[in-house]
Length: 194
Ligand SMILES: *[C@@H]1O[C@H](CO)[C@@H](O)[C@H](O)[C@H]1NC(C)=O
Ligand SMILES: *[C@@H]1O[C@H](CO)[C@@H](O)[C@H](O)[C@H]1NC(C)=O
Image (cartoon, rainbow, N blue to C red; front, side):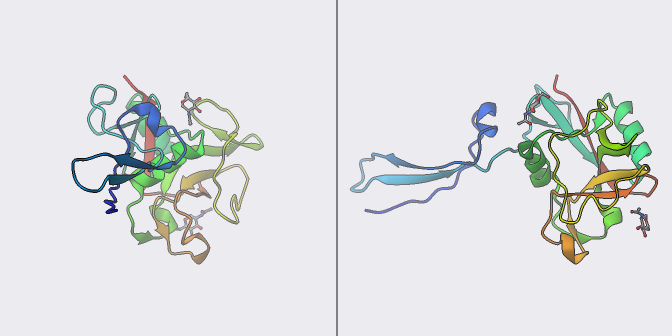
């Protein structure tokens, strides 16, 4: 029996994006002598283009729209810039959401920590809190040895690019602390879908 292995992005419906990764073998009868087998791999959560739900430049996932801005600034600058767009510095609530962002925004280059990406998490009044709603995170994705400093004045970055620091080399998508007043080269805004 001949086999045709075909990898397809399984994005025909939004709800399919929220499923855990699955791998199924489909067999299709044909007029050829042998059946054709399709190996369909669900890549898991992905941001997608959806002009009905998100304005130009923003990408959709789970009723929200996301955009990464490559503008250097402090954490406070990033918060203000997102708010000016009717959005908020991103709050990340699940590993699916974190993975969708990592896959979308990983630029696949090796850079230092000043080039990583602000997310909307800061240490305030004795705990880590999302700026979007003041809640303490139920989901976290700290990189190994992080949070290295939980103290006022500390904020969080996502490692969207490979880090030069050896401990972080394979920790794309992981979170790390960074001084809120330091300049980070990018940030991710999130807003409700239309
Ligand atoms: C989808 O969005 C809702 C509403 O914000 C949130 O409560 C839920 O955790 C999100 N789902 C995932 C898998 O992150
Ligand atoms: C702030 O940035 C400086 C210069 O890049 C760096 O040496 C320092 O470690 C950073 N501080 C924190 C707390 O991340």
